Amino acid sequence: MPQDHGRDSNAIVELCCNECARFAASNPQSKALAARASKHWLQGVPMHWMSDWPVPFPLFVGEASGNHITDADGHGYLDFCLGDTGAMFGHSPPAVADVLARQVRRGLTTMLPSEDAAIVGELLAARFGLPFWQVTTTASDANRSVLRWARGITGRRKVLIFNGCYHGAVDDTFVELENGATRNKRGLVGEVRDLTHNTVVIEFNDVGALETALATHDVACVLAEPVMTNCAMVLPEAGFHDALRRLTRVTGTLLIIDETHTISTSASGYSGALGLEPDFFVLGKPIAGGIPAAVYGWTAAVDDHIRTLLRTKEPGYSGIGTTLSGSALQLAGMRAVLETILTDATYAKAMPLAEALEAGIANLINTHNLPWHAVRVGLRVEIVTSPIRPRNGTEANLVAHGPVEKALHLFCLNRGVLITPFHNMMLVCPATAPEDIDTLLRVLDEAFCVLAG
Image (cartoon, rainbow, N blue to C red; front, side, top):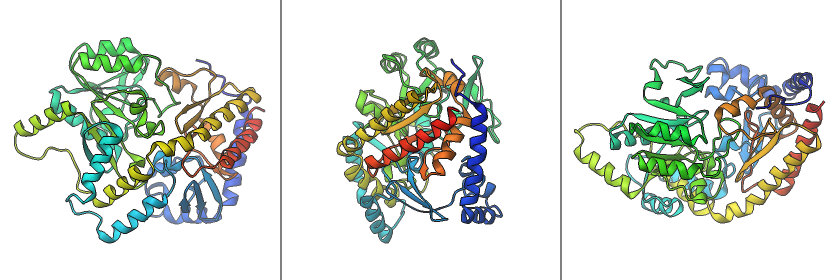
């Protein structure tokens, strides 16, 4: 894969230094809050990922609404990061905010189903085509739960994932390929097990490797994003998903599709748009409008196995579920999202803007003669620092260029546009306007001009 990410590495370094200095000078209130917070929070933030942004100190937010954020210093931003998909439908959509405000006064959690439970179940089944569902607090919880169900149903211990994937804080997925060998991911904290004993990892789009891995008939499930999104976005090749579904069925392996990021594709996700027919379906982040909630669903055939398992297992705690999952607040938020936002009409309105953004970035890349390309999955657009689309996680990691991603993020941030601090991902939401796309493209044009030297 090509390694020429840009024209001038000195320009990248200089740009990052200049933009860091500009950020520090422009945000005295965030700087003061960061100093205060560092006395009691790890790395000065309530969740340590918040310190991963490439800025001298965290940017503290005052408020967020629609696709706009105002920081503690009063600066406004067009938000194309949207909480890395958590606020994919915009910050505090009025329909969701109103429902949540009403529910707050009626009770938040009781460890009993609310009146919305039956309705939300019907809405999920109608939207995603799977009849049975459960609620968790995060997509990580949902994926952990589904892996346990899959192992319980099949009696098999192994799970299969794709190199470079991300399925949240799920221990079984913290495995990677290095020079063809499977190993625990680098940097894990406190992990004492060799995860490779029960996790098989292969490259995305490699049907031959998939067939070989499943031929042993000891793999309980394949856990997959339909499009890889944790590295430079990797699209499935023609026929890959057909082969994945065929091979899992032939070998008695359950297929789990994690749509936490790819819900950007359509109101029924990538699975609905392309007819993937998973055994289990996982969706987190935006399903309740930004409050902590996720869901997982399964087929009628799987449900028969689950009921048999529950009826025949020894009495005791299943190890699946948490106290705050399925709360009245979560269900109220999900009902509002499913009824008013996660609809075909929403996607039909926003999709042309995402298409315009992808085309605009591609045009800028061509204009500045940069060896990059733009890629899009529905409302999700990314800049990949390679002229060739990567086929798998290894190729995606080879073409990733952290300094370029950092430079683009900082440049945009200092000019009132927020994109993700990794992979340069951008999301279009229902609140995004055509002039917002124009603003983002204008800022990227300026950044590309500097980076091209």
